[in-house]
Image (cartoon, rainbow, N blue to C red; front, side, top):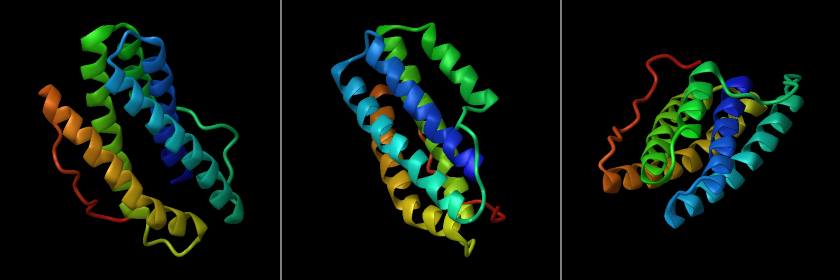
Length: 149
């Protein structure tokens, strides 16, 4: 859980840095900045909860799929970048919601962290889903996991 949760947050942090550097809209930059700040804190909080449980990771890193999304974003500018960024946020938040909901039932510090953080991830997803709808991108309602992690 710790590795996957921090991976999602690290992706959002790195995507936010790209949005700041790219010729994206003011709205996309503002959203990316807020999300990047929130997820930088989530990384710190998740690592602290993991440490309490005796679970540590050296440094958060994006997974292969997220690295591919970052690579795609690096090759885009302007409106194309903004749309791809929103689609990436939708995708990563959908996965994060399932991950956090699945782990929230675990009775350790990471489970408590997941339970406490899940509403924030869902709220952030709702905001990016609204942005996706305005841009014409798809954003399905995230599904609850069939089996808890």
